[in-house]
Image (tube, rainbow, N blue to C red):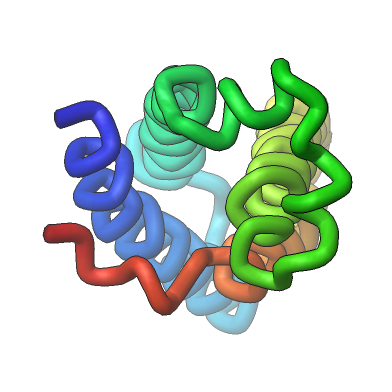
Length: 145
């Protein structure tokens, strides 16, 4: 159930990143003044959606057979298989790095003075985080069944 929820929630996450980046890019192109109720909340909601996804991912990882294998010294076996390596190491590490980038961008946006700096903080950090997410999603396991 948690694995299904983690996989399904990922659709919401990808959609939120896409919408957030489009809104912020359009705002910077149109030279808009930063709107607290719209842009600030959109970036915050994206961070919340990703935080929930990370929490679901941590629960999924610890409940998986991979965790048991790692506990019993099977890490070397997992590193030799590309699919196992992706699920055991690459996906969790890259998603956590993307979450940190998202959090960093959100904090920079909150502390920036000008509207343009707020927009650029989110565009750069959320954009890089979105790229990491898209690169390390285990596409062969999507859609979740």
